[in-house]
Length: 75
Image 1 (cartoon, rainbow, N blue to C red):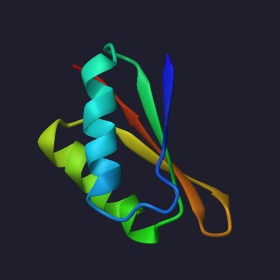
Image 2: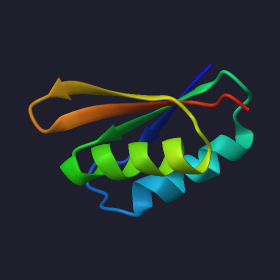
Image 3: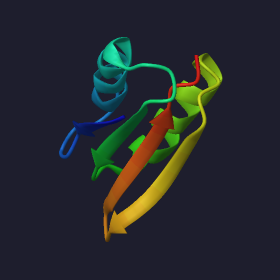
């Protein structure tokens, strides 16, 4: 199941906090899709969840200045 997290206009650490909250309700193999317009979020979010949990992630450029950061819950 995909869970969408709107983080448009948010700066770090707000996107990470929003994903952490959503992960509590997510099941293994669920994906959290963060919608962000803050370029620094792409690296900080990916680094946080890969380092802390080992969750794989993907960054998709949706539009100029807009990204989807996809985190997959693996455990």
